[in-house]
Image 1 (cartoon, helix red, strand yellow):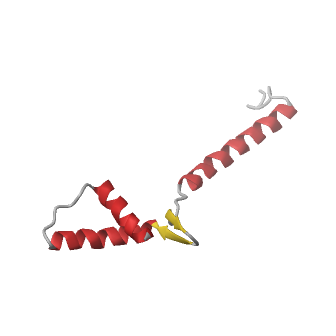
Image 2 (cartoon, rainbow, N blue to C red):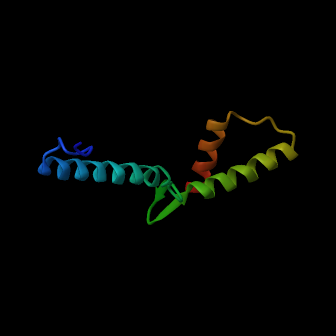
Image 3 (cartoon, rainbow, N blue to C red):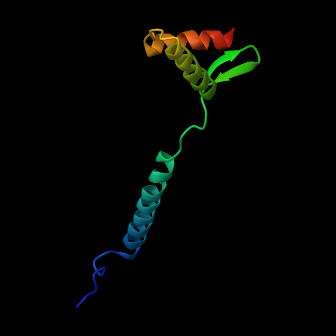
Length: 90
């Protein structure tokens, strides 16, 4: 009785093996690519300097805390974010 690959020509077996190896490599590479995340974002460039996302977040936290201490009504987040960014740029 012939083996399981007896009907595959010799060149076809090599092609099949190469295709399976390529699929295995692609399957292994995909999760690595999905795990890559930016470390930091630049939110503004001012002359030769940059404003980083982390700087903006930290300043936003400070401003929100100050406004809450004064019992001041907070503007919508996008508005406050834009205002704080404008102050960081100046």
